[in-house]
Image 1 (cartoon, rainbow, N blue to C red):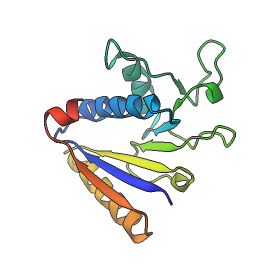
Image 2 (cartoon, rainbow, N blue to C red):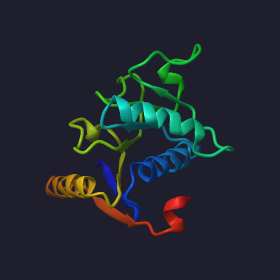
Image 3 (cartoon, helix red, strand yellow):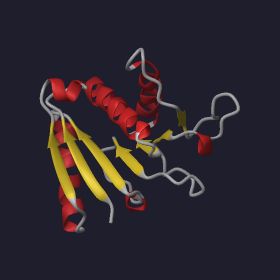
Image 4 (cartoon, rainbow, N blue to C red):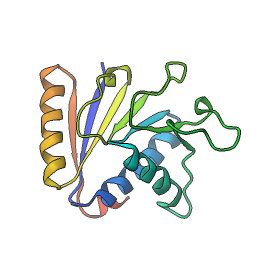
Length: 155
């Protein structure tokens, strides 16, 4: 059964949420897992794509934007981190973890071993993710909250 983790940040900004998403993506990728970042829309997906290149000068998270052509000769199945906003990665690409940054729960979330939800202190995010928490719990999924404070949310 899919394990769901909620990471609760003390910050209110989208930038803090995306920066933490990048750090979490780096950690997941370094552990050898394949990850799909599910953005709210194309604008957020493109911003995530940019932030993954710049969030730390000494970091490199190999990734591809799913709704665009892969850079160079790399196919999406060769890249451990994918970013999308419309749907899941293709079935031929086995991905173990989903990092959901959209307000709702993607209907295909249960095909992943792990789901991460990132919450910040923005009212719209709090309301949407509170509903997600309740939905996961009502459906019987194991859910865990991680309260991050100050330095913990920065790295």
